[in-house]
Image: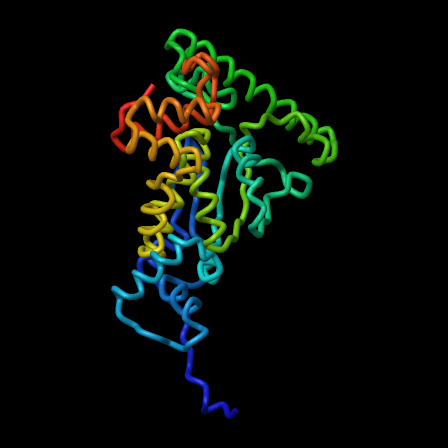
Length: 307
């Protein structure tokens, strides 16, 4: 083939993203997310999906329909053709959750080479959350203000003490890699984080969920609503419809709903006993996370709990 056989290619540009390149979106008291670079767009997803038979159609409504089909049926490869690179500043405890999402390229600020960032996340008196009784890893509600005042005062004292010890070690010539060992997890770190759209949407599905910790949820919502929505609006719309606001019905869920529709409440109750979601007497005394999730889905769809 000759060079003339190839059409010229220009880099995909999304004006809505170009307008926010480098702009920091503030999060928490001293954190931020900012877009550094991106590759691809909704058009790139469509192009990748249609590569097996050329350009195909170009109508906007058909492109949107194809993206929705891909999202609905979990065809992930076309979404991997788009990438995003972010610069983030985030507390270390939140970063520990963030970095568990391994399908990304990461370069983090090093406290071996550089002095630690002189900033730590602080908590206002009304922001101290109470441990959830039903969720061992979550919170539920807030402490009364009198306790919050005390905890915020103690937090300030502790963070100052930790910073003073750290700086004293540096002044005495202790290596940075050792001087840092007692810094609190509230200390901010920074990183460049590059990830493809498929894995980014998985991150957002988990971290925008109400069950995610508040701090990382704030970062995820900012990334999703302030950056991804502008970048790939059709893919974002499909993601919201088919992932964020969708219900996933299990085999048990479908059987209970079928029994409820065909045999009424008693039929649904008997099916729940048969499946082990209720005890032999049809009681909910036996705790069942699967049953509780089913009940939540039924209420979400407008059904009354049949037992």
